[in-house]
Image (cartoon, rainbow, N blue to C red; front, side, top):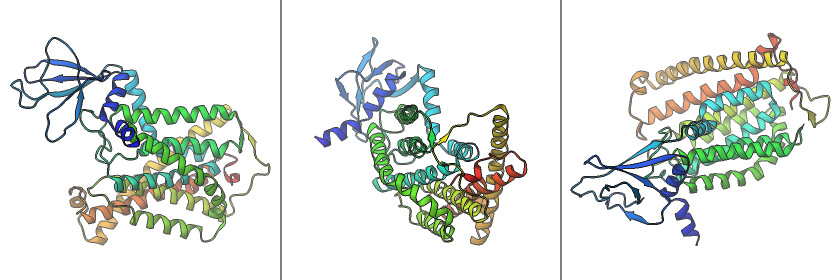
Length: 414
């Protein structure tokens, strides 16, 4: 029974059904320029005699002329074209899938630290890092491909990566639900509204990945289940670990050592994918954030809040909104500048140490055999994004303090 359920959830036609439901129409065209619309809501399916694929395609066809599904037909081989008939769902799901992208991380995480709550931010980032590291590693161990024929991918980013499990689905669980769990006893607010928001957030990300043709329903289900199981031990563990990470003199060495080992011993794939580089970025951001918070605490900048939790949410005034906007603008400009300078400097330095020409190495092919390029990529990403994380929690808040625009409670969030 379980075999049939797994096979059904992994069926590419299930992805096509979701796409059809939200206005993505597949059309079959032949060399005689005849076209026919393909739907996925009929039970009768026809076999496509493709020796290389052996995949099924839906056969509910409307129109007076029909194209043969065999490749040796006199009418010629067929091609599947997809058309987006509902722009609203397309743009909504493009926005939804961006909630698991680098741009989202680069804006949401700093914004949260500078304008919301640093204590919650440290915990959420640590949970996110562990969940993502495990998910990315499993991808390169399981090595399940993304949905194949007849699914058309509406987004090519990450298409070269393996698909099982969906790390977007894991992010959709780890970030909103960890925020909910870490804030429900810290602030006074209607928890049911937070739960509704977390469910909507997670649902939008998951459906967007199927709609865009990047994941099967099984990939999504596996990501949701795995992330949910990981949250059970991670949330209390991270909550208890935060105090040690701030107070222990061994904290920065431990964080840096564990993060470097995590990058070095990341599971190897059988082909080159951006998975290892993305994992390096995630791990280094977390390490930089934690080290920056540790430096703040050790310098005596941080002290416990004089009032115990739960705290009343203070709705921002016009002045507070202005300061938040200024902090965010200056901070994100600083993040961009840090990324540009640190990336250029670290890439050139590592290439010089290895005795390699940086331009030649940058333009060389992406391959598992290109050990130098993989090494340089991991090193520069670790340095660059680790520095961004450090600046986010230490350098920029101290700059905001000098400019008198820092959040008053920033150094009391322990």
